[in-house]
Image (cartoon, rainbow, N blue to C red; front, side, top):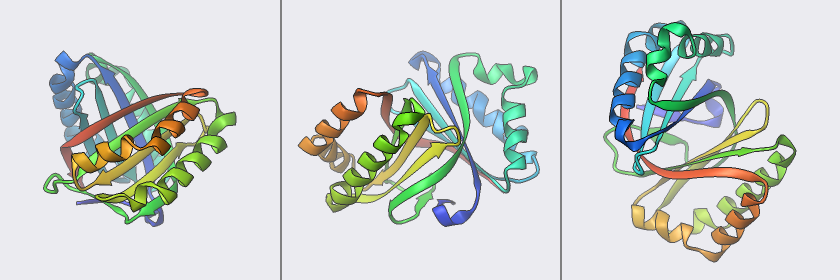
Length: 211
């Protein structure tokens, strides 16, 4: 199983794929082959997990590495000419991330558990990063963690400060939907929409590769 923790001291790379839903399965298969046959054989590799969005149009690949140098290896391989096949059906964004805040427990990722995974991917001008971060912390510390079914949530930022990713676990889908229906969440979403582009989806684990 894979642990996501601020104390883990790992280099994190996150690939976000936007894709036509007709090709999601094909894209997941190509990405799985790439991870198993190339990425996992690189020095410093710790783990890589494919998340398939239930809307059918999103894929998130979350990888952990030992040391910053190994992130360069990951980036070079995934965007190299020899690997264009994994990008055949999707637009793709890859960045190096760090964890900036955790609410609740460390996240345990396994294809055996039945928790609900919610991922919110945000693009914004870096001058608004502090505003978004403070709003997210306030919402999750004061509202989300008090809701039935909440387990944990971890906020990531890329190193240039223009992308953020919130990774959350809930016990049941109904718990997550109830949270998103709260007035506080609507107000927060309206505020964020003024200065960012946000994509939210519920995900299932399609593949996990570990050392």
